[in-house]
Length: 214
Image (cartoon, rainbow, N blue to C red; front, side, top):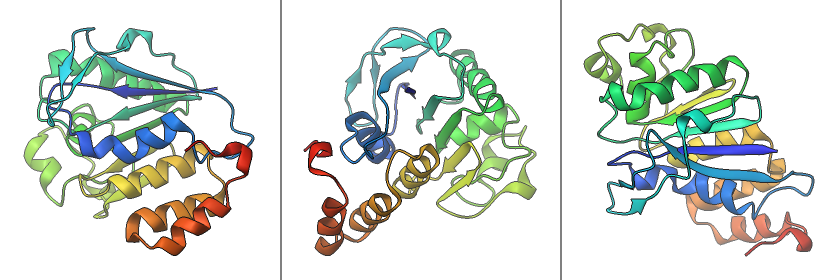
């Protein structure tokens, strides 16, 4: 069973998580043989957080509750508060443990700076908010030769993105987890990328009637 952990913190950038969390939580386009998925929000405390969009989120569990195994998935959204290492350092250390056992870690926007601060991008292909961004905001960053100037970059079980790459980031995470049929994923991505109605109808044709979830 996949367990999806979504790290929540104050000023969380709501829009960056929308595509990936909605599909992993709903499972509406999952292929038939996909097992159950557990979905939990996680934080450094149980206190509610306020997103950049003004939404209040109450964490389901604490960082210490994350199970470190290959079937765990950790999503790290952007936020303006990642520089508080006292609060957020523990989740980055957990990300290191997860990457080591082959679990999937996805980081977007400001979360990539936190990964850079702790050396997790020094030897993996990655992206962020443009050339020079990580050097400017993370003095500890040493991964320049592995930087790829693309909206989203997958390096095995680490998938990073800039704030404009949320849709591609979602696609790469879904592909890595293997929860969609290949044609379902292609038409899903094409529809949300272009708004082409033909892609939507093609997408729906890939879904068996007993797997449609609204």
